[in-house]
Each structure stands twice: as structure tokens, then as C-alpha cells.
Image (cartoon, rainbow, N blue to C red; front, side, top):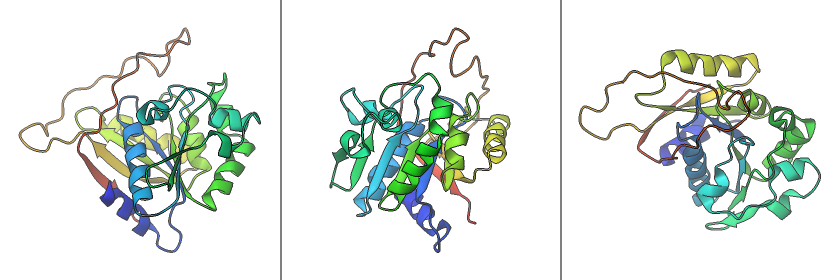
Length: 231
């Protein structure tokens, strides 16, 4: 995480990214773990950081930090609360965490709204903003968010993420006019022959056809390699 933090800082020394979306090609790649740990690592260096759960379909940040269920970013965007009222302070006081809040019926429209763009810009004047976003391939939310951000970090998984799926994810970002900041390769074996890639097939969508969520997978925080692109 410290290496990822350093890569982001030196990616563009004249204009380092202030609003960063963390996403993945598909569910289950550990994007919420990466976004949470990145936010903690940035805050530990003394920088003010605001971590926002922008996954309004299957929010995980509240679970990661053990937040009580209640108002969140969706309520702020709906005008029912202020960001100060829903933000929770953690660690050394430099990290504020904002849960997803009530799940709206139209997440893409809510996240792509002018109100969301203005809110991100307003927060970024005082802090680095990390937004945990849904996967890129099943839904458009992350690409919409990344368009309003300085770029997106894509989290892939060894033995799962294929070149084809990663290509689709990057293509979705490009079509939205968003920038890919780099790739985090997650769950890299520390030793042994586990570096071999296994066959992978993607079944279904982020949601089933009947609108119900797929079973929530386990978020893990295994070893990761970081590939950040310079400008």
C-alpha cells in the first residue's frame, strides 16, 4: 500500500490525482479492501483523506470499517443530510469514511449527477478523495464516477482476471472519457508455483435478471503487485 501511495504521488508531481476511483473488472477482486487500505495508508502519512463508498449496489465500506447502518453518500446527494453529518472519523483523525447510505433505484444517474461532481470537487479542495466503485464490466457506475475523477485504479486478480475482461474494463473507461491510473494485481502468491493462471469463466451479471443481488463474496486482503502508469 505504501508503494501504491508513492506511485500515485509521483505519477504527476505537478498535478497529482486528488479524486481517485478504485474499481475492478468484475466482482470479487478485492477493490473494497484495496480502497480501504489505500485510504488508511494515505491518512497515516498525515494527509487528509475522505473515503466514500460509491458502490450503491453492493456497498462494502461500511462492513469493512464496522459502521452502523444509516445515512451515507446517497442521502447527501438527495439533500437529506450533509457530508459532515454522515462522515465517520478513524485512526489518527485524518481519515473520514462515508458509507453508501440508502440504496437508490437509479445508482448510475445518482453517481453521474452534477451534485455528485460538485461534491467531489468541493471535498478535493481539502482532502484526497478515494471512491470505492462498482465493477466496470457489469454496470456503468464506475466509468461514470471516473469521468468526474482524476482517474481510476483497476484491481485485478491473479488466476481470475483475463486479458479479455481487463480490456473490456479499460474500454469502458475510455468510452466514458476517463483515465486509467494503473492496475493493482491482487492475491499474488508469495511463494511456490501458485503464480500459474487458471481457467476462468464469468457467469451472470452483477445482478440477476430478476433484480436480486448475487451472493456477496468474501473480501480478502492478500498480497498485491502494483503496476502504475506514468503520464
